[in-house]
Length: 576
Image (cartoon, rainbow, N blue to C red; front, side, top):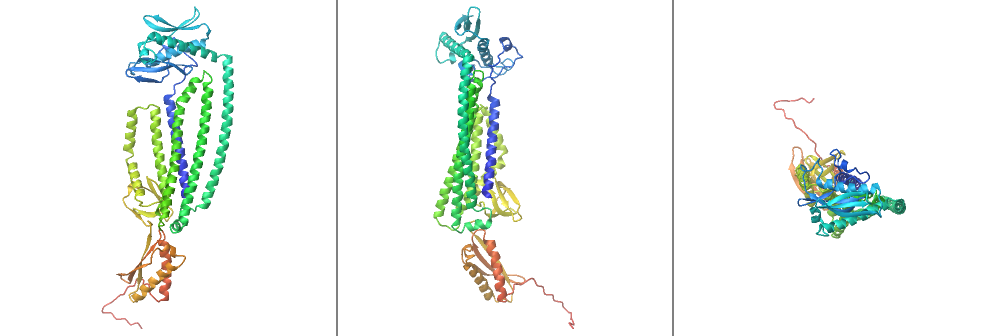
């Protein structure tokens, strides 16, 4: 039941991690995606209208210059620059760099969508008002200014230092891009794109079917491993079974079986995750290729490759890192348990601590992976550093109690104060430790109640089962009893019980008779100590009391009960 509980909690945490990353991905998509402005382009008068909202673009700032890419069908052609402007300087909340890029891309789209003769198309640099302007011509009656080459363009262009050279290079690039866009929109280009699309779909379907079959085989193997592990390893929640394991060789075999099955399940889970991520990557790659094949959707394909793929790559890398770390944790704990088994100690404390330590370490690595993932996502969406620092500060301030619980939980594990399966008393609550992590301790009481206690909420914990336990009996005998005879009977019963094959493995040392411990109102107290295996003090104590009562009855030794004598002065009674 304990391991099923761990598996269930791991599944819930895994789903939580996936939903968290999916939410971050959706946030990033909404933050970074710029709708393509190539399907329907407004004319220049609409661009200059204040009522026409302009889509935002990706740009970078270098000093006091804004730099952005000019694109055609989603493909970057060259960079342009404008003076940096803040929100108060920009008209209608649109930066100058956005106006310039939108104007150039609109001019290019107007040429492509309007149709032209590729053989007659010319893109030339002309001088207009002492400025270098690129102009597209297709015959004597068709001419369209495309863009102006500015001094800032020369500063950000690394190919040349002369405006004329930059203008000539960009004219050639624009002409080649316009001709290619025209050819792709012709029937022959569309047929070729659909042919390639059919090939891509067939490859994706065949490979996806193969990956799905491999996942089915691994899932079948997973169920087999789970069934075998449940048959081989007894339930850890049974107190008698847990205590028996600490005294027999079955303990080490069971613990190694647990680690062996856990290792095989981790390998199986890692392979299934790899195949699942491979299938997702295959579908995503197929979608990207399909979008890139057509000029109308190429911008979306390039965006999909640049933004969501980076987020999915982060998620995949972190997921695989978590799997590898979990595998190393299980491997390291198995080696540690093996070294502890070679010592041949009777308590085998390490073997008892392994499930708890494995669970806690895997939870810690999960939190670390989530934290790293959040930081990488914030960096990918270019979140302001001040906002990130402020958020971390608020989280740290509001999580003071949580950090306190984590530190206390770490010390509990490090100092081995108690572990899963121990019987402890925390405050006024007593019970067996059913679950323990860095934040909480859960106790199962005798009434069956599950008590959850924050690790930072207490300073004292009493462990009744750490390495060994002890029966502490105070046995009352009447004042008229021969004390030497009573002590001999008490000791003989304890010795005989230790020699009993059914009980000798639970009693670690010969019983200790401390002797007469106190004179009570109606009895003399004789104290006895019996050192037992962990969690066996109650079973040994109950059995010992049963045997002692029988021995006292056979030796006519009285176990007193409360009595009261009444004296009345100056009174006589006739009992007849």
